[in-house]
Image (cartoon, rainbow, N blue to C red; front, side, top):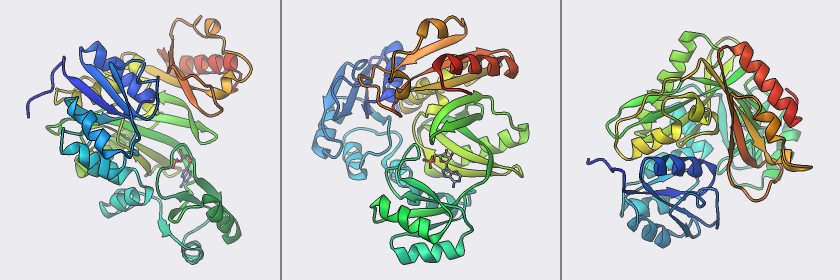
Length: 380
Ligand code: AMP
């Protein structure tokens, strides 16, 4: 396959912050960018050469979009499979539609992982109340009930301890298919973001550690405070997952680390991930440039860290409810970098931007994180 060279046009499905940061990298490297989504003046559209406005389910529009670009990639995985396959008849789409098909549905994803012997928490498919009763009698509680499709950031999920609680949660989901999985009493959550090229070249970033607030990523710390052998194992699993999916592009594997030091996969995202944003300021090549290189058939860049420690703090819309955060004070730390996504409305829980900080030691990093969180008024 011939590489898609600078000067060519990258088509991005989706128009949020991930597409924006990809578009910034693409423009820096001399590519043109078009974005496809129903939204006008979107975070990606503000950076792109052209914002193609259409519904995600409009396969004809998606084909027309594909004709105008050289390669199609995505910034969110919930593109309908038939739309992705329609695009594939016109231009290469990376990652390929089958990867999206697997990763956009929790049940298909868990089935793929367990049939390929990757470690996952025990789970059952739920389509009726009787299924729920049977599953609860077989699995140990507490469990987590999740919608089978189109879930993210803890949306459409509930922790349940009993059949009564599970029935309430099931009725509230208003879904005809769900997954019940055993709650993992984890020690910490980590993730591995990695890139895989058209030729199978594999380049992982160092595993990172993630903490959440209200089910939404709050802070990422790089590198994760885990043993070298666990880090190697997490990277090996990520490599095997990408190979098994034949995934070209960037993929994130989110893991639970159990108290006895085992890894359990929580979920996959076949695209750049929030827990990889720190790479923009913390690595030689960031996750967005890696995605661009991978989907264009270029050699992957170095994923080496440029400082010993790095952290990312998410900025959610909650912070804007009374006034704008105090950027001057935050940026008075010369190691702090501000990224805002150009979103017009600061809704509660909405990802508006992030801050990255680099440091020489984990102790210094912890001090910087606490300082930033204090300024933002979100505690530690
Ligand atoms: P998800 O949307 O599936 O990524 O879940 C969001 C967050 O909910 C995860 O990062 C965990 O903190 C928590 N969570 C989800 N599933 C489980 C589980 N089976 N056991 C424990 N925590 C979970």
